[in-house]
Image 1 (tube, helix red, strand yellow):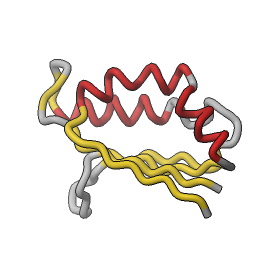
Image 2 (tube, one colour):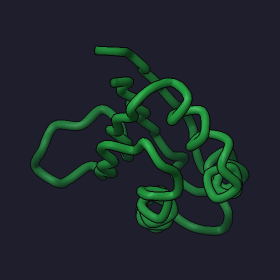
Image 3 (spheres, helix red, strand yellow):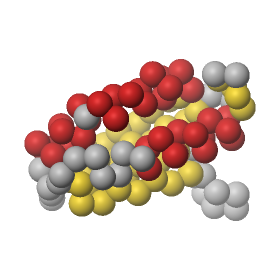
Amino acid sequence: MLHHIVMWTLKDEAEGERKATNVVKAAEMLKACADITPGILRFEVGTAQPGMEATCDLLLCSAFTDRTALDAYLNHPDHVAIKPFMKAVVESRQCFDYEV
């Protein structure tokens, strides 16, 4: 199994919207990718919540059967389609992939 964790911090303003609006939009776009390819075992999208510790604004915590399944997800047209928006609104991105 391969885990794929990504954390994003968004810009205060981008694409004509404030951070809060872009976080919601980005989260919705990611959630729409939850079952786009075979081999996705877990796909959780989280956003920073008031009163809870967070060092980023948006999180994807996912698991795939193997590297082939992750690659299929990463290269799927629906996933590729959200990249321009993410690049426009993201200030920083952290990614951590590991196998268990």
